[in-house]
Amino acid sequence: MKQKFERSKEVSIQKYRSIIQIIFILLCIWIGVEFYLFVGYLESNGSSTFFDRPPGAEAFLPISSLMSIWYFIQTGIIHEAHPAGFFILIAVIAVSFIFGKSFCSWICPVGTLSEYIADFGERVQKKLFKKVYLIPRWLDYPLRSLKYLLFGFFAYSIFIAMTPVALNAFLSSPYNVMADVKMWYFFADISQTALIVIFALFVLSIPIRNFWCRYLCPYGALLGLTTLFSPNKIKRNTESCIDCNLCAKACPSRIKVDKVKTVLSDECSTCMSCIDACPVAKTLELKSVVTKERLPKRVVAFGILLIYVAITGLGVVTDNWHNKIDRSEYLIHYKNIGSMGHPRTISELEKLNKQPILFEKNPNINESKSQ
Ligand code: SF4
Ligand code: SF4
Image (tube, rainbow, N blue to C red; front, top):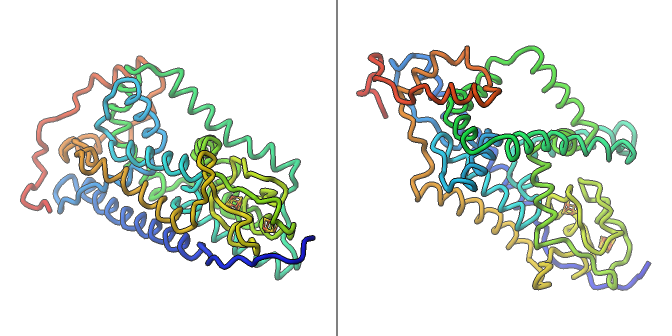
């Protein structure tokens, strides 16, 4: 090991990352409260105070949003059912392209919760066993491929099996229009099976860091593929590196940072824990592979926020944030929500699409109570 080295004086970025993670968790809670009030209005059949549906809820409809992006690529039309989801998914992909899979470790609330659970699990393991047990690599690799199989299934169903007509039929269907409300009831009125599955994922996430994100999340698979094409990568200066191994030890994704010159992994989420852990100045840095310039940590933190806000803001300023579905249509669809199944065939989609989108006004709606 080389002994003399110039010590890094850079401050850690982890505090800023935690702040951004908490901001997005709070944002999700806020969206959840607004959505709860909106569903309350639907449940009252329009007789209670109207609360607008928060468009941010569409962040939780990634499959519908992916269809919307693919529909836009083929037709140039932003579908009106969930336009906010369209912009949110573009923002997520853009952030992950420019700064690696940073959405997972900076923004995604599930990623944040997984991180908290894993930190807790590691503390417990250290206390009980004086060490942290890791899943063996021979099992880790095949498990990691599961999320790509899931994503492959969705990608085939959307990019290959569906024509623009079928996409439009699905996106315009009452099932898709009400997908966020259905998802709400999935959690609010959760079945025993779903509860057992969520509990199992929670328990597995304690000893196995990021169990859901690393092995099962199809969103993570999409962003993992995106990150491979990112023009910014973590680079190790092999001349100044003292082989202390601290970077690899700090990596939550178990990447052997100390053994490579460039981190080229679909699991790297640009959390920058490795850079923060490196004691040697100018040895481990996020750099542009094009200009070879180093990206300061604060620029990355600010850049992630800026790109996300700019793209979602574009949806707002171009009037493509709120959908154009009025409350009377929501109330009519809500009456049938229990019988709405996922449309499976093109003919089913086309049949659904022939149903009128706008209905005569519901007499129970009290317009004067609107906010
Ligand atoms: S390689 Fe570095 S930035 Fe990537 S996940 Fe590991 S610690 Fe985070
Ligand atoms: S933390 Fe990693 S990159 Fe930095 S000196 Fe140690 S082994 Fe080298």
